[in-house]
Length: 84
Image 1 (cartoon, rainbow, N blue to C red):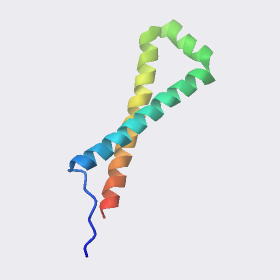
Image 2 (cartoon, rainbow, N blue to C red):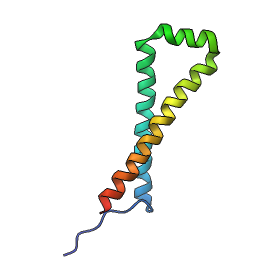
Image 3 (cartoon, rainbow, N blue to C red):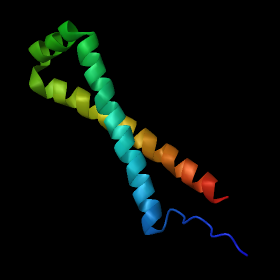
Image 4 (cartoon, one colour):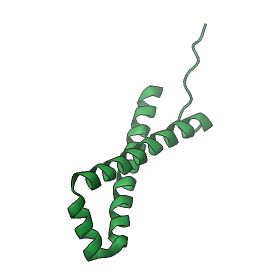
C-alpha cells in the first residue's frame, strides 16, 4: 500500500502552511518589538521625541516585517525538505 505524499508548496494546503509560518514570524517580530519597548522605555521615548511617532512605527514595522520574511523563507526551506 502506498503512503500518501504530503502536498507541496503549490497546493492550497502548502500555501496555508507557508502563511502560518509568515504569521508566526510576524507575531514574533511584534513580540520582540514589545520586549524592546519594555526593556528600554527611555530609549523609545527618546526615539519618539526626536523622530516622532513615525519613527516608532517604522521601527516596529521593520522588526515585524524582517521576522515575517525570515520565518517565511525558513518555512519554504522546511516545506521543501519535508517533501524529499
